[in-house]
Image (cartoon, rainbow, N blue to C red):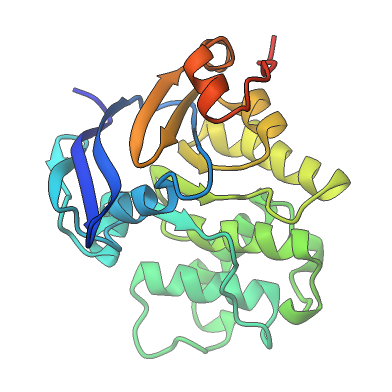
Amino acid sequence: MSFLSIEGLTKRFGNLVAVNQISLEVEKEGILSIIGPNGAGKTTFFNLLTGFYRPDSGRVILKGRDITNRPPHENIKEGISRAFQVASLFDEMTVLDNIRIGVQSYMGVKGRLFSRFEDNAEVREESLKLLEKVKLQEIGAHTVKALSHGDRKILDLAMALTTRPEILLLDEPASGLAGEEQARMVELITEHLRKELKLVIVEHDMDMVFSISDHIMVLNQGKKLAYGTPQEIADNEEVQEAYLGGDRCHARA
């Protein structure tokens, strides 16, 4: 039994078929990257997996359980979480307090959403562990509005981790990042997160995609154009013509 099975997933918006009969068997380990030109259906595909959209046909099976038409909050309980391209954070609060809100919500602490950490040692401990995991512990007391773009992206990722997911969807984690900030994100993804959970990534930075991915799915006009290892995708002439402009990509060694 596959960890995640996608069977004939289809989504229409009027006459536009945004996702067209996509089927895929996803293993539990490793990094799956999804690439394709603008309008290929990548974000719609993410929305179908997480329950933000309901498909017109097809199914999503996670660990043998059909989660196709479940809303996002129920899918979170099944082990799917998502970090967005544009982070949605509490700007006036500290980094640590943002994490605490996510932890408290997931743990079901009622009536004390904005209580002090001292009121719940378990929430505090879990929040501090998460900050350390994503290497933000040194700025835990900083107000979110003062953070760099890179730190905001990592904090949003940490918020997704508060639900203790088994599969994490990252929507353009390198968007707007360059140099040291991008290197930090890549290190977090490859050296830490990939060892603990399944990662599914939508990303436009091809150098990053081909360096970190175990498998790549290429979408084009809502359809699955190709699926394979980075080397197989780099060697695929149909992919080169449809998406990579005929230029040969260089997969990792």
